Length: 165
Ligand code: APR
Image 1 (tube, rainbow, N blue to C red):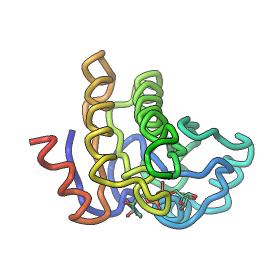
Image 2: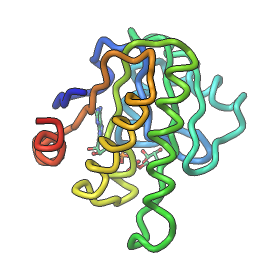
Image 3: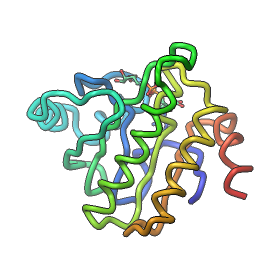
């Protein structure tokens, strides 16, 4: 597991995880960046065929113009104070992405800080949860050799680094 600060669309990995919405309709933040880099029209066409994705779940599309093979669209919870199942739903995103990666036999994946932007999940709570869930899946055996937590800024990266040291 590694922390990288930067733009997730520039990473050389087999799977790029997107922080999507239930409609898979595209948006701003990392979703917008992934759509622009993958090719907006072709990615939206692939998303429309899937017909949406419930919160806490993950669906897969090709990665089109990205160098990755797949985009995993994870729908994180909107933070409502922590008493609405947010933790379990966010954990489910990481778990499902890890399980799916193993099923597809890929060796590398990059996660953004799902839910930590517009959806308001506190990064200091999301980082340990992400690392815990990923570690748990790696411990159970996985095709994954390289898991990147891609942080857009140093502040969020600062929550991951002590956990991976
Ligand atoms: N690479 C890596 N991380 C990025 C990038 C990028 N290019 N752009 C933004 N981020 C970071 C943000 O700084 C934040 O830490 O990704 C994290 C997640 O933020 P959001 O993209 O706002 O995702 P989220 O909080 O899950 O909200 C999802 O926002 O864009 C819409 O369609 C999306 O409705 C959905 C909602």
